[in-house]
Amino acid sequence: MKHYAIKYLREEVIPTPFCSGCGNGMVINALFKALTELGYEDLRNFVFCSGIGCAAWIPSPHFKADTIHTLHGRAIPVATGIKMMRPELNVIVISGDGDLAGIGLSHLIHAARRKLGIKVIMVNNMIYGMTGGQVSPTTPRGIKTTTTPYGNIEKPLDVASIMATMKVPYVAKWTTYHMMPLKNSLKKIINTDKFSFIEVISQCPTNYGRNLGFRKPFEMLKWFKENSIPISKAKNMKEEELEGKIIVGEYLNQIE
Amino acid sequence: MGEKYFIQGNIACAEAAVIAGCRFFAAYPITPASEIGERLSELLPAVGGKFIQMEDEIASINAVIGASWAGAKAMTATSGPGFSLMQEGIGYAFMTETPCVIVVVQRVGPATGQASKGAQGNFYQSRWGTHGDYSAIVLAPNSVQEMFDLTIKAFNYAEEYRTPVILLADELTAHIFEPLEVPEKIEIKERKVAVDYSEPFFDSKDPLKAPPMPRLGIGLNVLVTGSTHNEWGYRATSDPMIHRKLVTRLYYKIEGNAKKICEYELDINDGSKIGIISYGCSSRSAYGAIEILSEHGLKISHLRLKTLWPFPDWAVKELSSKVDTIIVPELSLGQLVREVERASYDKTKIISLTKVGGGELIRPQEIVEIVRRL
Image (cartoon, rainbow over all chains, first blue to last red; front, side):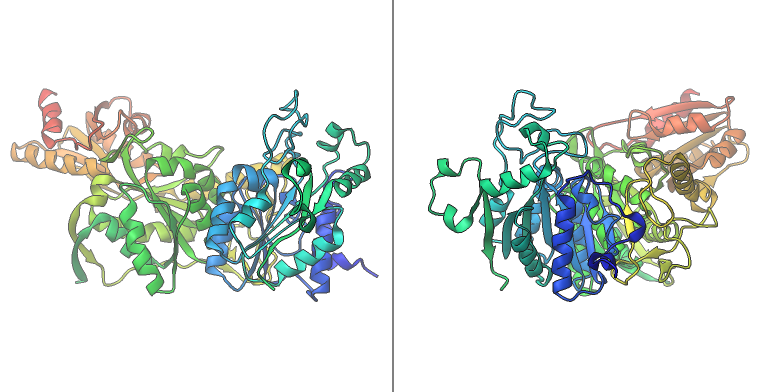
């Protein structure tokens, strides 16, 4: 029997080029489980847009679907053009934190403002992985990277909170530790035609984990678990208590 | 006889786009190109098309690319600063063979320069603006009539060669009001669409022809990437042969068709020893000078370029073989003149007549003065 995910993959490009222990495969698994549970036999009518970076390689070339691998940061404008001309298509953007929160942040904010029915999955590994581990706009304070050898002095950007402030129809944040709720969130956005945003904190053992002293990917997942706080609980906590914590859950849900 | 109008160059461009089949327009406001978007925001919804004002020019060119892959003829319009921002996207459109039209209404630069004043400083940028090895199709109108005609042509070339085409206008041509006659019969080229896997999406047996283009959303599992890719769009970023094959094919697809793409007016007057090479608004100065000089019995030959890139070397050579001197008037510190120097015979003396700033045209008298001193 073939693996359940094969129907969504271009077999000729498997295995993926991702480092061992990378969170990208877990994101793919969560997405494909969501698609399977929703009854999709193939990815017809889906268009996956991605930018540049490790997360942008999730759909391109692996997904057996229309995939458009755009310039760095420009997946959302390309998705905008596609969705405007073909509103019947399910247009999903999958890219990383450098792509969507760094070079392409303004496009994300304007797409949220326009509320065009594109769905954005930001895989946040908190680092520029593909270029060798430089600080990203979402790298936590104090972390040493190849361009912050004395520790990051900048405050990380909380993109999910920005999206929530903009009152887009759906915002959620999970980590790769939270596979079941992530899958359930993905099921919701796949079947909506409203602008939605999911941030997935994901492990990059190669270029991020080693800076934190994690020897194995699983140690990072454990760290995600121990540092995550459900949004319901976080609402009653003080700002200093939440410093360095990952607030997970559905920030906004107006699609159900 | 077609319908006659008295309208502005930018409006002629917008009207022509819709006639050419443009159904998507994304842009960011910028002087002196804004009227094109203003007019299309009215026209496109009426024909089932889409208009969007994007957050910047980078987003604009990328939205155009998305719309083109969704199956639409698509266009953007900008000027110097916006054109600079679009360069990476233009390279992506070239690399992925995405048909689209980029209207550039030249203004005084560099930087913000003089926003509302005309210039011709983007001659080289229109050809070499993005990084890497590529070729470009650039058309240059010199009247309201040509803002119309060449916009149609730009869409036809974009679809025929599956490539971005630049309409390089200038503030003077874009803002002038002149008579326009809409031809009764207009040739419109439609996209060669891939509906199955019988031909690769990114390769062609005939190197002079573009491959058929699939549309997203019809189940063909199209792979599009700006990285080096094989004939089906799979990324291949280490193989030297795949890169050489791709980039030389894309380059030759345009350069190999130069004779078909290049349009110009070559008016050789027997016995004339002096020639002028011009394009865009500066050609109007040249016409004025030629008229004055002919009144004094002096015959001048003139090459007026309508296609700037690919550059018609042979037309320059032909003029150069007939005259002793070529004058090149342009609203820059000397760009077109360098191509003329490269393409002409050594025996021909090349005189550069330049002017920049304030949107002042070269006065015909300035050209006459050069001729008088010869």
